[in-house]
Image 1 (cartoon, rainbow, N blue to C red):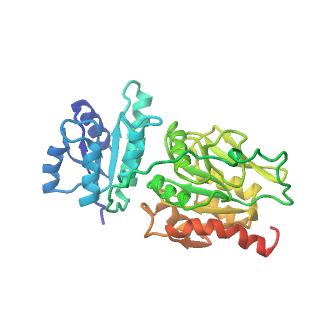
Image 2: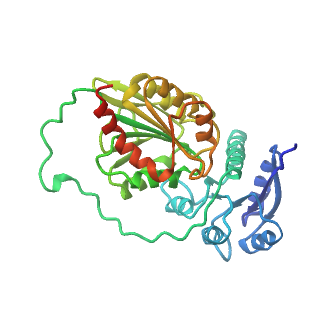
Image 3: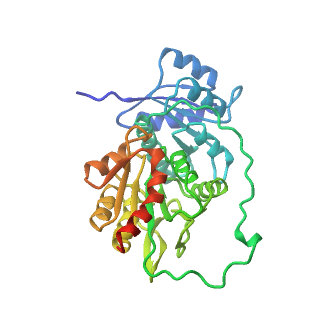
Amino acid sequence: MTRKPIRVLVVDDSASVRQVLSSILSQSPGIEVMGTAGDVYAATRRMQNEVPDVLILDIEMPGMDGLTFLRKIMAQRPIPVIICSTLTGTGSPTLFEALESGAVEVLAKPRIDTRNALLETADRLRHAVHAAAQAKPRPRAPRPVMQIEAKLTADVIMPPPLSGRFHARTDRIACIGISTGGTETLREVLEALPANCPGIAVVQHMPEKFTAAFARRLDSICAMEIKEAEDGDEMKIGRVLIAPGNRHMLLLRVGQHYRVAIKDGPHVSRHRPSVDVLFRSAAQYAGGNALGIIMTGMGDDGARGLLEMRKAGARTLAQDEESSVVFGMPKEAIEFGAAERVVRLPLIAQEIMAWPQAVNAAGPA
């Protein structure tokens, strides 16, 4: 049986951008451009006759802007939406507004200045459309605006101790691999964790330079320290390290503790950073001291690495299908025999906090 093509509607006020996006997608197997629109009103009329499988949406447009239209779609009839805009650059609050409002993916406008840039953009766009087509967007109500208090430390009460606590054995750490639909999913997990959570290393598939802004945003709303990882950063209680976009992150053991190494290199499982790279390094250097978690995302990155972690004695979890935006990565890990348990999203933070105590009660690894 022939699989139906993914039908895409492109909404952008620039005729040249509509032409470039349509040309890229029309040449992609399994994708069909059902139409284009120069503003959201034309898009609404087009969608009255046929709802696209995936909507590609600009933000800056005449009349109603793209973010407002996105919120209306997600509140009334959710469909997978990819935001493609010049306003989603490094640190832009628009990037996170789009993700919080329900966008499956956020991409920068295509670069057409060089052939290599255009090819790279085309590959990223095709991958995003295929991933979005598998997504299961849910209705969203606007999140209330919260006043974020400055994150203070114990330094305001008393100076830090002169020496750190002695660790008789290697620390327990957690590694998370996550992709499409993962930005808000990861936020839910980290917001539910206390300041004394185990050290966590995260590979989230995101473009270069976006991860620093993403980490800063999470750091402002979560109890623990969250930062984009730098080469040599120590993993420790109350710290979450997020792999920088376009660089691999590996776990290394230094004495009784762990640090991360940031490396260049080819794409692994079609990704850089790759979940498989992180998980393999955790299997090699942490073994039974590690907890591996694979969450929402398209493809199979992380499945083999998670199996290696399990064989090395680590605990391994996969997010369940119902709570995954895209069940690709967890499904592959489950079918691979890599996941020891399948867990719903609301319970993942509990599993992270319960795991070190359960291991300690059973004795040293």
